[in-house]
Image 1 (tube, rainbow, N blue to C red):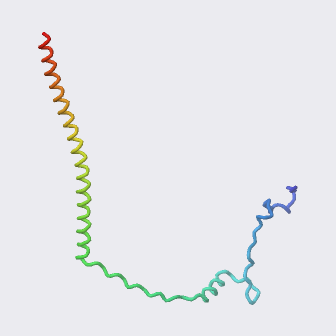
Image 2: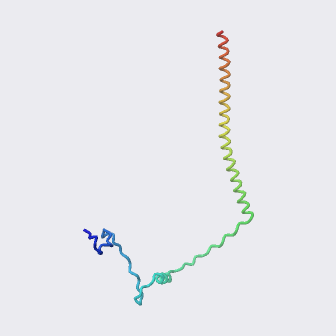
Image 3: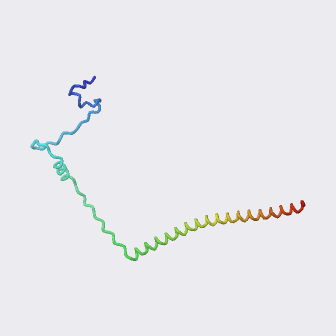
Length: 125
């Protein structure tokens, strides 16, 4: 059982498995603590620096090359717009044609039924 009144258990976390370790600071030849910045400088002096060849800067594009890129982009844009417009136009045209065909079929059927109705009533009289 933990005695909550004592100062000995203030830092107790509850599980002995949760204890962690840390490394002691480096001590130099003069038995002084070596600052981390000094240690990093010492470690960096041991590092080898590779000579990596620099890539040549790319040459800027000429006006002709820029114009070709712009023309190609414009042609692609027109082609995409034309394709999209054709797809939309086809769908709209089909819908409009279907609606017009249905209306005409309804009108023709209605007229035919009206003629038969009149003929029927004439024969009944």
